[in-house]
Length: 333
Image (cartoon, rainbow, N blue to C red; front, side, top):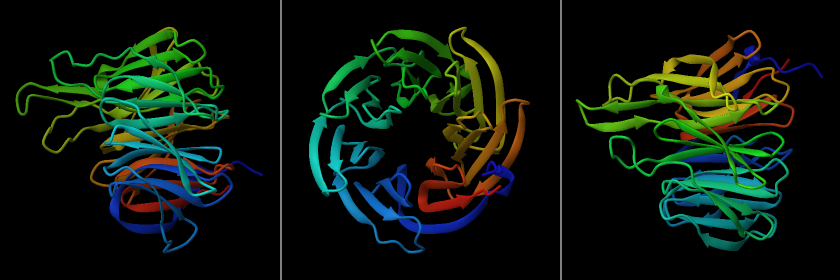
């Protein structure tokens, strides 16, 4: 089958919601998706239908900010500082972990499905054994306070394609690269362009690393968020991505979207055909960047601020979750 062409990207379905959706996972080889909702629950629905009925799974009692699927196990976290493990087939809760001391921000499952990484505003990344929910180790490399003594946040995490490395990114633009096998910190990459300190209008820290993706060979890390913000009231700044050689700690490439806002999701095609950056400001946007010749392939708007996205196995279908909507897109050869 010829490679899917990002220039042919088009919306095929919009599902209106009353809630905000902060995270998204998909059951392999289906259009069934799992979403983390501001209505305090994990929901399952069929995005192949125009008006799907949502099935309620885990109930966190507070905002659910992250959900991932490992085999038949749904794992979710949120403002309640807990991980809830849910058997999707049996439709029952397996276990609950009181994990972090502050709210969870993101989860990542290793490519082989054996490990789970969780990051939270306590500035700790925790590595878990998926099979029994036991903690493997804590990874600590991010400061709890910003240089101007504000509380920091640990926003995101991502495994390399071979599962040997894990990246974590925080509010001030620090990215730590970890050896998954032994917990050694392999490198620290600083990306200060994604962090704004406003000492005049509101005296606060803004921005941070909101998305991460390793290159297919694992030698580079793409780091996404928002560039320098001029209007702190409107959080108005250019959506921005930097690409670093993490071992040498050097920036090798950078690009900005045409829209103002955050790149909340980065997906690097496994054959390096493109790097896809997705996010939102007042609305949403998606951009495909050619990493070989460093040119933008295609950009387009989306009808809502997007928090999370995922591709189908053949890379022709793209699912987005965000503010009050789910959007399904297709890009055919």
